[in-house]
Length: 112
Image (cartoon, rainbow, N blue to C red; front, side, top):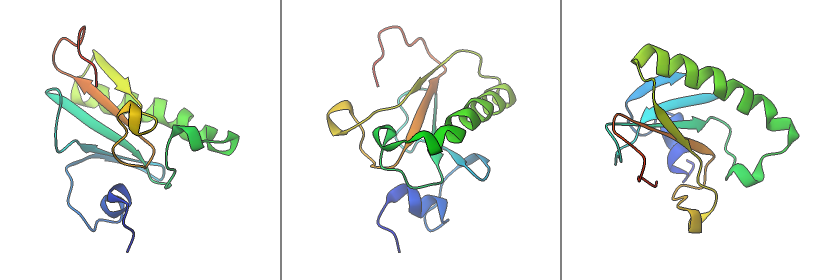
């Protein structure tokens, strides 16, 4: 059993509210939302952070554009912020590559 929280969610060992899933990404609701809409776009491949990406991962970022578009259109989200925290000092609390989507309130002075 993996000790990575997100790997355990991907393996369906832990529950989550799933909004989307394909071969590359799992999109779930954050359990500690910082906005009315707070979704996590989690890479199915265990990559510790954005810093660990290599050119062989370029398909993940291209696919992410498609997934974000599909989820936001389906959910009626037209204004949002995408955030990727890299490293503990930047706020990355789970060492697994993922993006936060925040929406549903004015985010001008909001930092994640």
